[in-house]
Image (cartoon, rainbow, N blue to C red; front, side, top):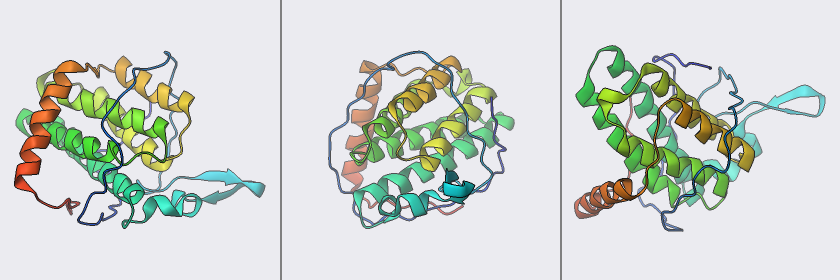
Length: 214
């Protein structure tokens, strides 16, 4: 399994202040159990290396520029996933310090970001299915039950989504399988109840989405 340092650098993409909702929350369970082909990458979180003719390396920005436009729903989804990845790294740091309160707070923030991002992932249903699983898993998993290995795997999953926004079904299923193998559970009914309460509270506050600077 690839692990990520808790001090890894994250690139933040600022979303616009208004979220453009384009679909309702839904999730499909994993299609099969297979092993994750983890992609190790030393670049910033919002970049992906890909081989094109002659072995040249290009970034996800170059491959999919529309997905990084903060004026679009696609770009806002990527920004929200960047924010979730930052929180996952902070949760790993807090795990090393045995700070269960901060870990649980980070899980709540990841779930909220994933929920809002999922509504904007119409550009790729496979991407959206992983985002939905992460939302449910971080809502349902108590901080006291999580392992360092599971937190590392969550970071790997979020970074891979940001490296490969046009991920295919097989790879999306692999990511979910590996999260489950590391202890993340995506139970549905209770997670939906928690999410409904969380979103209702956010709507009452009526605050614009902002990517936190670290």
